[in-house]
Structures are given as structure tokens and as C-alpha cells.
Length: 415
Ligand SMILES: [Zn+2]
Image (cartoon, rainbow, N blue to C red; front, side, top):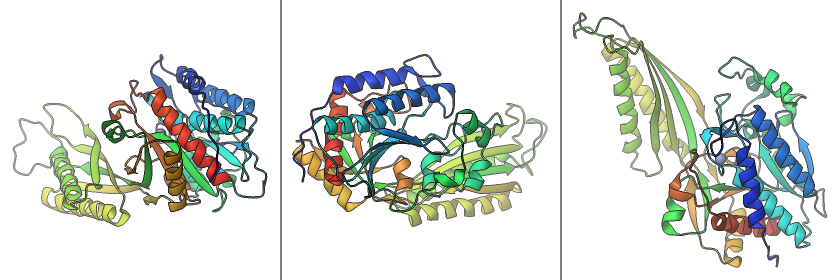
């Protein structure tokens, strides 16, 4: 156990969060920072400067994942990592991701000021494109680090304007072979991500920090339904092949499958429903659905996907439509590491902060880092559980508590 007692500069950290929030494609306080866009690059430059000012050694990989290293007294040892992301979906707020990056930096600065000398190096990581805005795939940087996304598949990624990843990363100043982004297991001795909860529990219960024991496993299924269009008045009901009516059955089948597990942790959502031609007097001939299915139990989650696919076959037969379903991704859930959770628990107690164990239902870069390192996450409250909106808010007290617990845990893990 370390005896470090961090004295945090929370005012300075809040000022940095506000400055970072003003680096936006949208008019502040709205934050929009799409990966490799102009605001993303300015935000990266701002954070990298802060890291250099803090005496950290900054390096970047071929996809723009950024590592800011505080060399330990035994630099041969695998480092302890902390960090998050600074890209932001359109119309987002100040805190998602940024609290983990700037809060991680503040934890490091505080330990430095106290004269603490880590045995293991401590590395702040800023992951590229946690948000799926540009390429339609979340956690691009950490996925590639963990070899979940191969360089070959990454090279085929395109944004909505048809611009490829290769050209975009090159114009953002990131070159070199994508093959080098992958990290070996053991590259980090441990990894802790500080993040806002993005849910209401901590605030409701008045608890300072959440220690994340599991990160739910996301999966996504895209469904296209091809029916037959026609005049809404002239075409009689018998023999219709209404693609939207078929889609409605699938949406309800998915909901029923998720409820049927009886587990509170199973959730399923159809968040996209595109109808063609989308006219009030025309029978829908084509529908595209995008669904999201999550659970902390991967096998249980997969049974929901199986039920959805069985429903596709059934509806196709009964309604005479053509249904194609594509499993876009099905990532395994992560179980957080006991030793890192114990360090966080020790830190929360020593810091006099209240805590509870909880599940992360949103996924984060840590889900992928879990493939190559022992991990845990540390949640702080956010007002009303609101996130991915401009009114997202975490108070200086909440942020301070999170950084305090993080700093102590980093000190313990790096000792
Ligand atoms: Zn985030």
C-alpha cells in the first residue's frame, strides 16, 4: 500500500475540460469532434501539449492512438495504463471520454507533484475513434490494438462520403503500417479507465464512484427486408408483401426474445428503421433495420440473436418477403480483474470515498483492452444519467473524487 495523499488541482482540470470542450465542430457548448476532423486534430494537439508540459513522453501509432508515458524506475516492466477518448459524437457534451483522459493526466500530475516515483511506468492512452460516427464501428483504436479488427478490414473502412481510412489517417498525419497497431498480451500490466457512468445509479444513490466488474457485450444485427410496393388504395390486403409490416414483427420478436431471458442485464433495441419509399399512400417495399443486443453473459446474448434470426426465417416464409440479416459485430463481454478492482476498492476506502460495484452497460475501449491486459473501470456520476447530449454534466466534486481514487490506485498498481 502506498501512503500517497494526492492534492488535486480540480480547478485547473475543470478549466482544461472547458477549454477542450470549446474545440468543437459545432458552436459551444455543443461538442462535436469526429475522428480525423479538424476539431479532433486540434483537440489532440491541445492534450498532447498538456502531456508534454507534464513531462510525459508522447508517441503515436499508425491509427493515431496516443501514448503519454511517465517512465518508472524499472522501465523494463510492463506499464500501468489509464486513459479514454476525446472524440465526440455530433451534438455531444464535455465529459464523455474527456474525463478519463484529462482526469488521468491530472492523476499523473498530482502523483508527480507529490514526489511519488512509480516502479512501473504509467501510460496515459488516448484512443482513436471510440465513437462509431465516422466509420460505423466503435472503439476503432482499441479494437486494432487488441487485434479484434484486422489491418486488412480496417483498410476497407470508409466514411459516408466514401473517403477511406487510409487517406483520412494519412491526411491527419498518421502513417506507417497498420500492422504495428496491434499490441501483444502483456503490453500493459493493468489498465484502468475513468469514465462518467452515462446512467443514473451513482447520482441516485449518492455514491462517489462505481467500480465496474463487467462490461456488457454489444452485438449488432443489420436486417434488410424486400417486399412488394404498390398503391396503398388500389392494392388489396390479400397477397400483400408489406416490408414494414414484416419489420414490425421482427422488432417485436427481438423485444420478446430479450425479455424472455428473465435477466435484467439482457437488453435489445431496434434503433434504425428506414422505410422505402416512405410515402403515406405507398406500400413499403423495402425496410432496413439496425438492432443492438447486449448482455454481460455472451452466450445468453447470442441466444437472443439466434431467436431474432429464427424470426427472420419464420416471417420470410409467412409473408413471402425476402429477409437478409447480417451480424455486424458480436463482441464478447469483459470481466474486470480482481486485483485491479481490489486496488480501486483500497483507494476508495483510503480516500474516504463511497463506492459500489456495478456493470457497464455501455461499452468502452476497456472492453477491447481486456483482451490483452487485466482491466477495470472507474465510474463517476453524471447528472440525471444524461450523456451524448450537450447538457451532459459531472460536477467538479464528482470529477475530483474519481481522479482522487484513480491517482491512489495508479500509485498502488505501479509500486
Ligand atoms: Zn466514452
